[in-house]
Length: 138
Length: 138
Image (tube, rainbow over all chains, first blue to last red; front, side):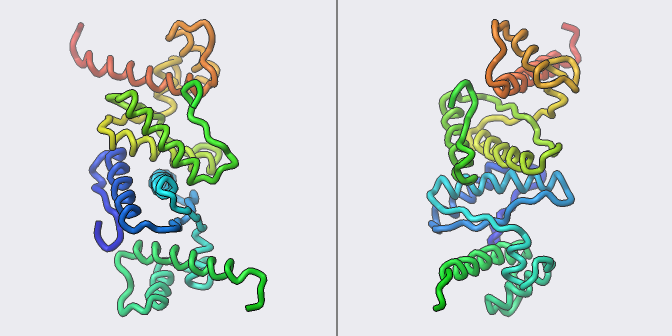
């Protein structure tokens, strides 16, 4: 693992790669003991093979988090972009720039996948604030 | 679990259901200690939501099996139908009838998903025999 991204060797067989990701996610959850895991909801878009692979990993991550007693919350790509960049059609670069601004960083997060992950967390925090204020006028 | 099929409550949240499936699969693998786990390759077909849900479970099953040191082999739906029913376009009923015949059962397996699972195992056994005979004339 480097810079918050779990990487596996594309030359390795899929089940072995999935088991590696499972192990790393489990270690992270054990180390960090999060109350909530926020994850991007998997949508089928252009590439079926990619969507299926993402769904497999998504299933593993949700199962591990839930098994560890962690709440799991899913957000759509549009919800995440809306929350972070202000509009649902923002591109990856804009999301990266907004994450950099919101976190007050001198440089954008690298790789961009890291910024995407932070964007999901920021989306969850924003939603929590809205939820917490509820219908009250405070 | 009943009749070889893991069931979860559709009213339960997805991450919790996935964690349940993960736990049951892990227990099965621990109990049965299989050398090989044969699984149907996930294809996108008609229903995107169903395909995504199947991919999530498929990812969990492959990760658990691989983590337990079990070989994982994927077969396409056509390969499975071809191996069991003799042609790749066989329907679910025909697969069920062939599984019943091949296993010498008085009744078809119920639920039909059980027959599908047995069909995948029979497909793997058939492929193994072909592979084992190789180029020899025995």
